[in-house]
Image (cartoon, rainbow, N blue to C red):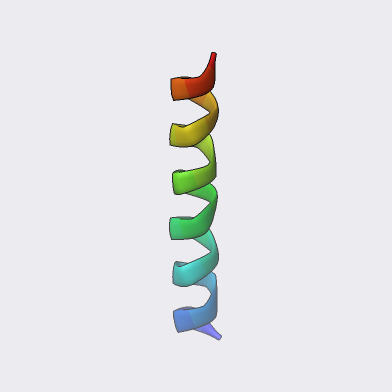
Length: 23
């Protein structure tokens, strides 16, 4: 569970970075 949450957080971070780059 903790590992899954960590992975989701990392994925969310990557999504945010890509969004910022596109803007």
